[in-house]
Image (cartoon, rainbow, N blue to C red; front, side, top):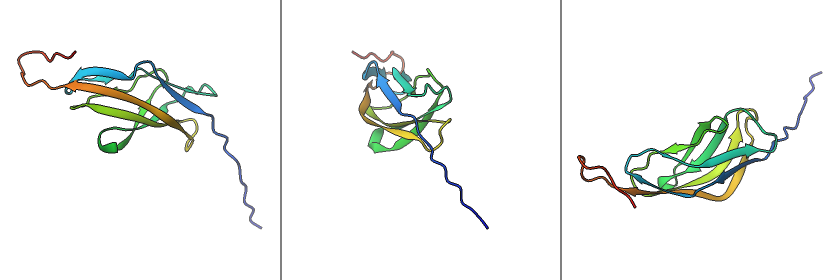
Length: 118
């Protein structure tokens, strides 16, 4: 006789917080978001950050604990942080409310001169 064994996966709660929600950059310049990821169980494994950028296109970044996400927008872009997960808990993601990171981009139309932004 076959039996089916079920188990319940209890997911920890993951969180994300920003120290600064706006940065200025030149087009194509790398911008590091001052984002902190955490969990109720202090997970040490790789974090998954699900976000939406330009045109609401979703993407996922894999980040080590303490690592900051890096973006390189070509124009003004607001990145919305959608959810956070951890490799130690496959399938467990915590939706993040209204957390966003904006990058104001200055175009560099003079390749010889450095891009200046306010």
